[in-house]
Length: 205
Image 1 (cartoon, rainbow, N blue to C red):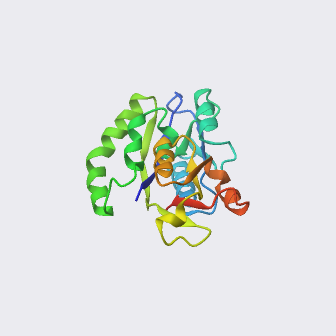
Image 2: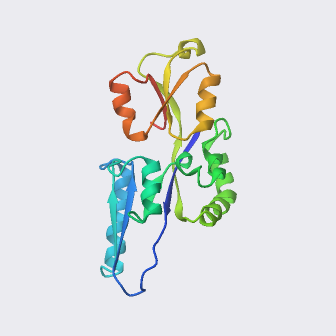
Image 3: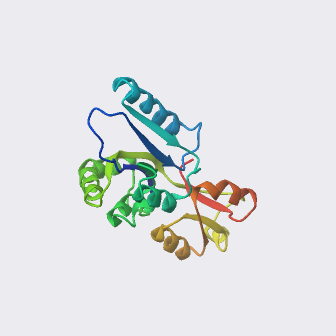
């Protein structure tokens, strides 16, 4: 089992305290999903509470590119933030890999116990790396899901499994299971399944 978390990291530009500001935030999360609906609802509430002085504009579905491109746009201040998976930010702060390591947690309760003690430390590490973090969101344990029946370990051998960009830990883990890891950005996973570029994904349902 592997824990997948969405980390929302935002680099806020300096602005006069009373001036209106628009924060542009990119994410691979598709429109119409619960996460995107919640983020847009939050943006609407912030706009209302600040009487229009703070506007958050989300670019969903990966329209601003993959995580590497989004990080680059944040650095040159074309964007003010993004919503990322831990592996996408591991290049900025490697300790984020903690929540994505396979076979670390046996239950949701155990993961919650560790998070109650580690989230604040990881948030501080992100701040030290230059990011303001607004929290971690969980989507639960990952499950291996295949386009063809898999009943034994032997059935997995040689299958092509999706691995997120930058996720070295998952890549090595899948190789150890005799799988063929295929690195793709999150936005290309559905197409990869439809075109049989990959056979298996490891994600929460």
